[in-house]
Image (cartoon, rainbow, N blue to C red; front, side, top):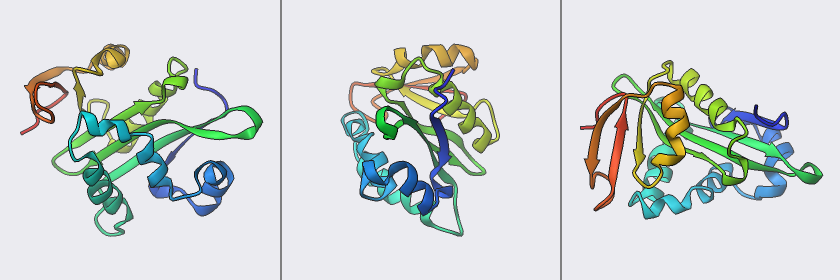
Length: 176
């Protein structure tokens, strides 16, 4: 069960009051920058992750007309009422694709139900329990529980799709 001090939010719906009350003391910058810093190591697996995150994801969320991306994140309270980001899901929801693009639960908060709740929040936003999700061979073992729990169907194995010599496993659909 997820920690009762864990809150799940869609970044497009975060108001300044929420940022101030839950995160400003920890962040001191835009929430998107703090989220990116929690994912920065993905540059090693996904070249140009920085450009994709800022130019596609954040820019699309800030665009008031044509939104098809969302970041859902969880913050969990620790000692002395300090909160930190415990989970992040970056989603794409358009006519052609319902996809979990990035999914991460901070290692200090794994096996607490946060991943399950984050998947369910993602399914709600995407309107499906079987979104496309790609998982690097380097992270596949971290997702085994949820792959089984949600009956994700392996459809493709793409060697070198994002990074040379690394297999990307594609569930619930195909990448072109």
